[in-house]
Length: 114
Length: 116
Image (cartoon, rainbow over all chains, first blue to last red; front, side):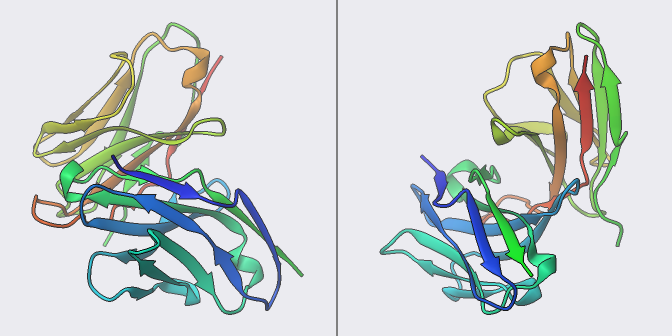
């Protein structure tokens, strides 16, 4: 069965400091993993994706994530937080066993303190 | 290239009524998925359509149904609305045509449904 656990429901960082949003996954096959961001009253925007190529994935707006199979993790990082990064972040797993079905984590709300 | 569009953006209905939501995918995308987002349950998968066929279905009652047209546009219908159906309904499209890996999904802005 596929599932995602986002380990923090809320993260607060100061502007200019690093961001770490944690995600663990469970998958029966070789997973595809994604991070999406949702700003208030908006749809979801794709930040980055892992699909069995390089384990370190770079995304938009300076975000990146590292796929660690041994730890079943796919944590999202950014070296320096910006005020505009404040949003809800979702980790998603999908695999060939379930076609295109996405399994979402419960989300992590990121607050950036000026 | 235009993104995923959803209409209407906001909707208010009363209990017992039915509602139809519409989604137009990105041009060339043949897979359309629907999700319900609520504060309590988060993002939950409703169903996915590909080439006018429902391929996957989430754990929702039969009051929730959908369809896809030959131009890949999709509609979802909720009959006999309940208060608990109040949610943001998100549509996502993907290029996926089968194969070995999952393609990313592109989401529309959603339809905010309020049931009173």
